[in-house]
Image 1 (tube, rainbow, N blue to C red):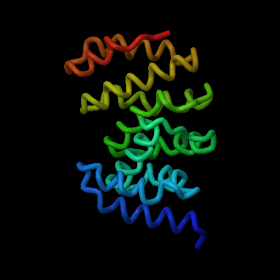
Image 2: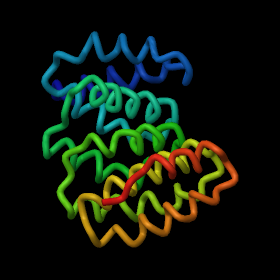
Image 3: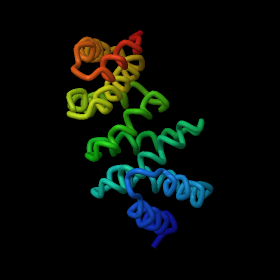
Length: 175
């Protein structure tokens, strides 16, 4: 077994202990393994795990890394974008949506993410609707072919039944 696979398996086992609420265990996982060369590769590979707890924890770690000023390499960004269609846990989807504006995405990857975001814009969870809108509008700034879709979504969000979605829509400026 290669070191990268062993690390991924170890992190997966540790993420299975996550209760879905307290991020302390996630911070501890990042602190324990963050210095290892293949850490982010392993975590990104777990973002689309079938176990929602694992996917939720993995995406939280990626988001936290970006929130703390970290970046993803082009290869890691491509891997995260490629994983998105398989991410089904709503919290994991939310973490990715909250991270999209911090990713260095070329237009081709922005175009790959836009269709993934489309059903999230009408999700039953308001925060996911709000942050998928934010993500789509961030993508529109990277690729003008997404601008019309983002404009329609922004207009619809302005009429959303949830105040959080309407507030997010008011705070977004399309280029």
